[in-house]
Image 1: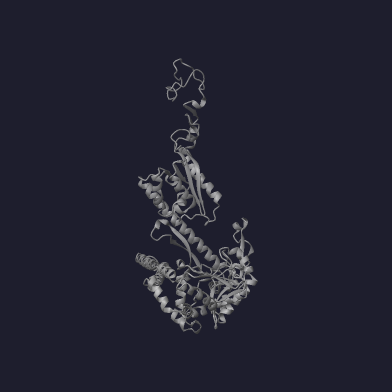
Image 2: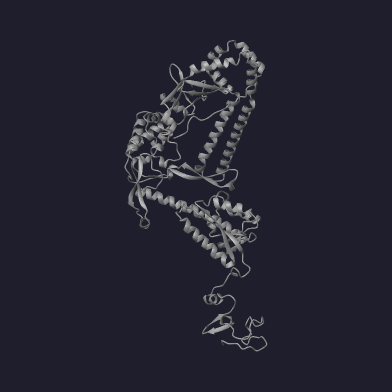
Length: 632
């Protein structure tokens, strides 16, 4: 059976089933064994053909899906997209490897070749494609006619699309003629195939369900570890503690991988400050008084004490909010606490749901906060002391402003008017000087303790720089009076009239009205959500914030009064009626003088070394405002 004789007619002397007989492929001589149409080998047979895998496929029962690359009819060059989230501790390299491998095994039998890779790392699947790094690059490349690929293949659809994202991204691929190849569909996505459309809708729902299931499972497991074992679950250590090594991880598999158990240990220097804060509060000091006391004593604030874990903060001093956070942290009792704060996803743009969500940290409901059954680390304050502080906080906070007003310590005198408020700057550091009233006079002060410790300005700045208000205003008033003498009166009157711009106040009123309307729209939207069955607990905070925003905007709007325009002639007439301008300015009401300085755009730069002040005036600078300081 291994030979074939030439019959002279060009026909094959073997079976008529030979595919090459009619094509004249045989010539005189021998025919290769693999070109034989059929060879019996006991109970089986070997199928001939140009594909060298045909025999093995037949023996193993496999079937080729399509021609291999180079065989004609391939799907061409493709791009690959995958995603790896760090929430479930995946290794990006191995995740890319297996997703790319799945995609390659799917498209290579179809004649596809992956020529470009897009892989998102640490990007949540809940983010729309436009807000992920690599997927947004894919969408940009769709518009490039020279991108080098005509289709996109994914390794696993549930990692790429979430919820209704597929229905929002597929039209963009269709618009630019780019095909989508999805292993779970067994081929190319066909928008006219209702089964394909339904499958991708279900895939998005499964992806969302899987993510939520993982989140609930992880949170429940971490809460159980805190309750039963007092396990430290990571994050920044509270002020007063440091994180130390406590031996191998209790999970054998993680211990083999080198993971270590971490626990909280006392930071003696900071712990003494924490203990003192609790005692000062029980002694009657308020939050601001405690912060001021610590600043005066030059005690480093938490962000200055451990700058390596507080890079996002300035570390320039204690704030009352820092003191309040310490007083409200139950971990100082030695018990492990979990769930005080939670990640909440809020719409990036309430008017555009497709833009996706952003993560915010919000205080958790009491029902979601858990505590260890036994002490988990050394306590700084006793449970009794912590409880007394919490009760005192509630008493001082009261149920509202009326209750606070009844307390003697909250009664204050009428607000003092600072004529040069927000208009005096320290020439050395460039910051605004704060008003400081004393019994005999009013001063403007710049304190070095609010500067960043160790900065060049802090080293050169005196402990405090003071400027007395009346000494400065007398000089300023005398200078201003020269602008209203007969020689300069006309020019000054014209400048003041030009600076009296009512359009600015009108625009402010318009913006405030828009804020009121936006808040009312948010309240209406939240009411509709409640009627639709949303959990009231999840919407209460947002609704209260909208109500507060509306009230604040309405209060500001009611305070805006657009004054009547004053002409240059009116100004000249008023100046002539006043007579001695210097005396009139010195004797004028403090509120009126502050308004005048504001209208003139007065700015003062004080040099403490030469004890001199540089004064500038520009009516065009009306409304100029800069914050005095930032947070800790």
